[in-house]
Amino acid sequence: MNIIQCYAPTNNSNNDIKDQRLQSIIEKCSRKNHTILMRDLNAKVGIDITRYEDIMRRHGLDERNENGERFANLCAFNKLVIRGTLFPHKRIHKATWISPDHTTENEIDHICINKKFQRTMEYVITRRGADLASDHHLVVANLKLRLKKNWTTGQTALQRFNTAFL
Image (cartoon, rainbow, N blue to C red; front, side, top):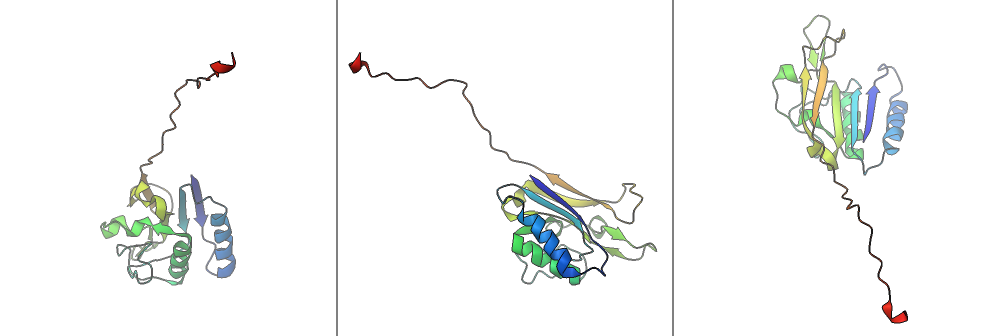
């Protein structure tokens, strides 16, 4: 399992450098394994799913911003599903950031997983009660891993002898 945790530099940073750095990290991960991308890149993906039907649903918040567009492109290119947009929750359980004056709420923290393993992540929700000393709320994902069992019998194979040569 590959877990990638990202935190956005300021919006003044060069977007191409940020995108190339994250893309190089994702490319190092094996596609055979679960890859979970958790990030705070100030990306609002919104509710418009045009061109992104494979990676998200209409259960996001508000409008998509420029970082959200770049994030959706990255997820589409790497076949990562934005799981927070797949579940219908109340607005208070979707908002991951709240402004200091408590008037603006945004969904800018996301958890993504390979499309191949998307059924592993059962739901994603925001926990507002966690005391994090931050203006961000805790984002929680429930995973249910379905792993293959490697059966070993503990027996050695019988060797057959050619009795005609005896």
